[in-house]
Image 1 (cartoon, rainbow, N blue to C red):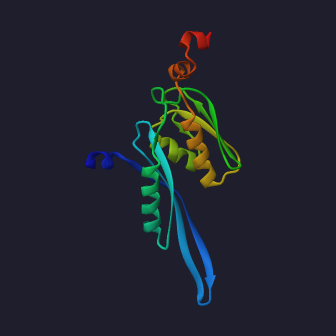
Image 2: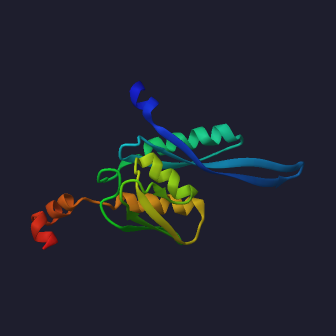
Length: 163
């Protein structure tokens, strides 16, 4: 268990400061979006809230570890093009040739790096809210599948599917 903990990649995507106005002035609290992955095809995201930033990051990391799920990868990229959606955000993910790298913005890049994707092109469509971008990227990644998985689920061979 200890060796697995050391290998996890943890990235803080966004920290938000929230002010609550009380009788004595403003009371601040923080929320942090954290992405955790093993860099080999497993990734999760979590939101942590606390009165201090380090505590919010710790809570977000714990939640992300609980929500980790496997992602279908093909070599260093994704098997096919996909659009992930969450709220009003949409993320288009396209496979790319080796050497392309990760062409993505901050929130999407953090999720893809933690998942272990090395070559991909992405485009954020509509809203750029970091909460929804992380969820949309995870939605897209988790809906990926290899041709073998699709063929098995339909009870056919890969050749029958691809024609």
